[in-house]
Amino acid sequence: MKIPQKAPDMWEIVGKNPEMLSMFVDPKMQELVAKYNRDYLHWDELRHRKLPVEAEKMWVLLKNSRKMQAKLLDFGDWTFQYVLTGETLRRLHLLDTKGAGNLESGPGGVSVADRKRYILNSLMEEAIASSQLEGAATTREAAKKMLRQKRKPKDYSEKMIINGYQTMYMIAERKDRSIDVETLLRIHKEVVRDTLDYQEDEGRFRDNNEIVVADPQDGTIIYHIPPDYQELPSLMKEFCKFASNDEEEFIHPLIKGIILHFLIGYIHPFTDGNGRCARSIFYWYMLSRGYWLFEYMPISRILLHSKSKYGRAYLFTESDENDLTYFINYNLSTIENALEDLEEYINFKKQEQNETMQIIEASENLNLRQAEIVKSLLKEPERYFPIAEMKSKYNVAYDTARNDMQYLTQLGYVEKIERGRSYMYKYKGVKKDN
View 1: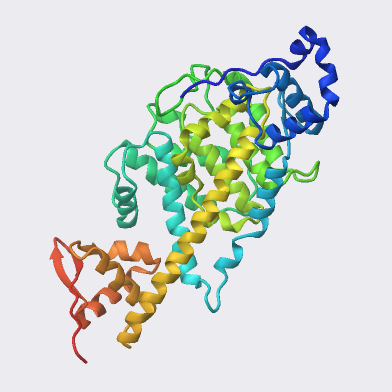
View 2 (view 1 turned 90 degrees about the vertical axis):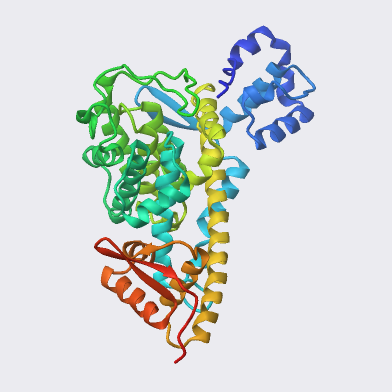
């Protein structure tokens, strides 16, 4: 990852160029400032643009405008700032109002059973992508198959994914609880279980400064140096207080969740697993504040597709006076993309449901779930499926899944073979006449 050039100090530039003060009130320059601030360009981006004045002078105008609008956030010994641009407000409005209706039950909506399956699928997708962001070497298809079959992990990458899935499931189950230091350490322990060089580092803050912040994809060293380990107890208490206290100055929940995400990466309280913990805590916060739609949106899958931009969003903030706007805007863009993916997925599943209903109409002997099983088997006609996978995929009891498969065998839709002490099922494609 390319390290962006650190933003220059605006007051040093003004000191060297006092004549530029008149530019602050020039209408044409103010129009350009508004244009570049809509995109919220970082210095490393601005300096490569074709500009009517020197890049440093334009940067001073942009920074002055931003400072006048910025909201300040004191945390530890740092002062962070962020600007709610027009694009930021548009995305906040969109994510506050759009999408939920697509999951409502009723005619044309999504059933309760489907919602449960969507949640399980989302938790799987989030666990897989979040682990892949940290270097897990496995395919999405292989990882989902492992999770559905509840197979034991074979290597470090698969263990990361299972840990991530169990952590996400735990968060979804405990979303109504406030976060404290004990819960934070519990999340870390679940995320890194049996994957660290030293097991005693599970569920505890680092006790040394032998830590390097680097890009997990290419090893690029990021110049940010996390705080001394002796400061961690007080910093993490402050973190939990900030996360749980909504009584002081209001911060929009989406903005606050993203800030919490950033702070874990910035503080780097653990020897490993900081990125996965940061994303897990973001999910917990959003669910705890009533944003139930996030149970259906695997954000990390979008982050994975733009991981270089994800890393640069951190670096832009750190190289420009801790301006969180870069990180906030990138994450809001990612969440918007995840919402679009969710809408496409729901439309696709509704189409599948229509196709399933056609199977039911052709055979009055099948219920909706059994028709969906036939459809899923049809997509992979050469593969054998265990009952455990069907149980997980359709979120039903084992006995229900077994009865479904036995019933479909009786009807002639599938064939059953014995594998050791269990049975496997494969699409047969011929239904008995009744």
